[in-house]
Image 1: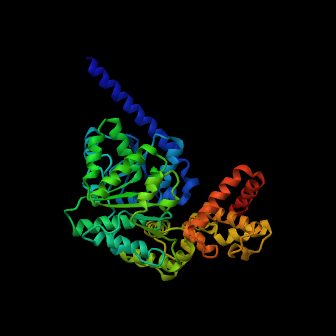
Image 2: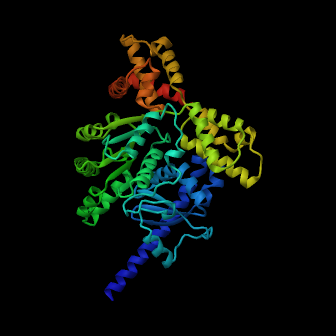
Length: 474
């Protein structure tokens, strides 16, 4: 009787938790029009339904695979941020497909629950070519070398990824890819994994995010299963960790990864890592970890050029086997310059709108459908805007932003401009350095650190920077 009572209490608690998180999801969705715009919310996000919350993962249902993939690619990370801002217990977001799900369904049957658990909590989407290891993440079949468009901003990273994927022996260890959001790091990681599996099927390849690595480590600690955790990761031939910056500053997870990294490198097994910054620029990393990550090849992916963006759009249209006016593609390549993910999302929105509404695709309809996105891109701040505003504020010449002069009256405004460029634009440190007369990325890094230190003690400078930031963002 006691065990039965405990079971009933547990089931009651789980049911209450599900109801609580279903209500929590509804509260978060009220923020969607403000965060994503009315068009995206009505066309895509309103169709997502709460499914369950388990082990820190909030699971949603989408009515189709196409919608699941679109939301995951274009809005997934931002939705997760909104969830985590309101509830720190949400560690991850999963979206599963259920075409038969009713609009008001938020409770699963026992049969559905059993099927879901068999798919493995951390490895959904087996129909899309997942990593068959229970601790890996699914690979996107769209992300192959054949579908990767090469241009000057990414040619080094692509060549390095190709070399690692095709080599019979380990060449660069680790391979460290870094760059801003949506520039192709994850695409290259998946492409490496697909190529190795095709050409070297005997090699054990595991791809996962740094967030999932941390989640698995915490779970191993919770269930006192760290030995199995260590054995799992040390047995792989190729370990790929995406978004490494997530574990910077998380000491215990970083310590465990450090030992895993050393064990794999000692056995001459390949390690591939991606992050938004280079190892030297990642804050919260131990010096020994920073040093290890710089052992192999560090390859930067720069922001896209117009030619590369146009090539990506043309490639996507070919893959979709659809027709698209050339003028519209050129318009998109000019207007949406932030990142590839946003560019592809815009293309998907236009195609979906055309299919659902039946309107011809023209520049006018594109401007109507993408009003929120185009407005956001028009507001983006450039380094040139920052340099001009800072020069005016501190009464120095615009040319001083690029000159080698080191007088304090010139150097300090230049450092402030570098700091603002780092905090207000998605550009990498090397890219910012090139905008300031071809300076090295270490110069930019020094300027950022110097300004951060001065802001703590110099109230006048801190107020100047706040004012400049408001003027630039207005």
